[in-house]
Length: 249
Length: 153
Image 1 (cartoon, rainbow over the protein chains, first blue to last red):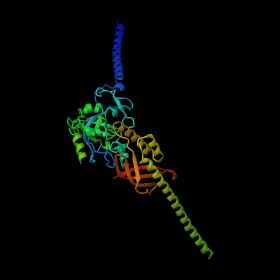
Image 2: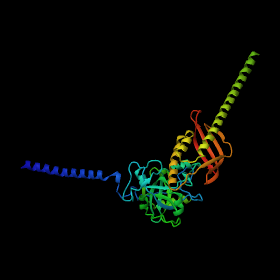
Image 3: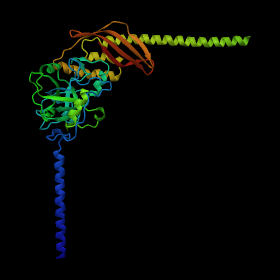
Image 4: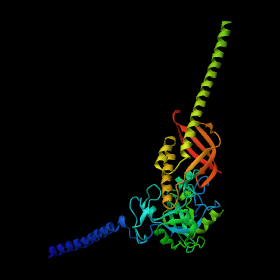
C-alpha cells in the first residue's frame, strides 16, 4: 500500500513539474515567435513617454554654424509645419512596419547616403539642414558647412507639437522637403507616418504657408546627450519651454 | 699667420655653407610654392567650374587633389543634390572667374592658398567669392587638400 502511495506521490509531483515545464516552454516559444523583427506590429512606442525631453539647443556646431533651416532673412527656422515623408529603404538591420506606420509599401526614400537602424528609420526627421545645399541645389562650401554636414547625420532633435504638447526625439536621416514646398505650404520639416501619427499634427498641405496647421517646434538635443538620448516619445513638460527659451536667447 | 688664414677660411666656408643652404632652401621653397599655386589653379578650375557638380565625372576630376574626407563629403552631398533634383531642383552650372592670382603662405607643415574671384551659378546668381585651400603633406613630395572652404559675399 505504501509503495502504491509512493508511486502515486512521485507521479503527482512529476505531473506538477511537467505542467510547469510545459508552461515555461510554451511561454518561451510564444516570446520567441512573438518577437518578429521583420514585421513589428506593436503600437507601443519604443521610447519612454515619461522621460523628459530635456532642453534643446539651436545648434550643436562648435562654431555656431546655423544647422537648422534658415529663412530668407538668414534666421533659423525653429517652428514650422510638418510634412509627410515616406519610409526609408536603406535600412539596417530590418525595415520597421507597425500599426502606426500607414502604408508600408510606400518605401521610396534612401535618406542620407549611409545606413540607419530600425529605430532611426521609425523616428526620423528631415529639413533643409544648414550646410547642405545653399538654395536647395548647390553644395554649401562656406566655412563650417562640411562639419555641419558631418554633425547633422543621425543627430537627434526634439520635436514638439505645441498644440497638444506631445513630444518626441527623432533622428536626422534625410535632407528635404523641397524649397518650393516650404514656399507653397510653409512646410519646413518632414517625418514618416510614425512621427506624425504620434504627434497628431494633422494635414499641413493647405496651400497656405501662414496658417500654422501641422506646426511643430524643433531644436537639437544638446551635444552631451546626443549619444544617450533615446529615440521616440518623451514628455515635453520640461522640454518645450526650456528648449524654446534657450533658442530665443 | 697661417693659423689666422685657416680660421678665416673656416669662417668663410661656414658662412658660405649657410648661405648656400639658405639659397637652396629658398629655391626649393619657391619651387614648391609655385607648384602648389599651379596645382591650386588646376584644382579650382575643376572644383568651382563645372557643368554638373553631382556627376561621377566631376567627382573623379576632383578626387586626385583632395583628402578622403573631403572626397567622401562631396560624394555624399552629390547624392543629396541628385535627390533635390528629383524633387524639382535644377542642374546648375558653375563658373569661377579669377580676380587675382592665388596667394600662398606656409604655416607649419601646411601651405595655405587664398584665391579671390567671382562665382557665377549660371542663370541663378553671381557673387564675389574667396576660396581657401590648405595643402598638407606626409612626405614633402605629394600634397593633398585637407581643408577647403569659401567666403561668399
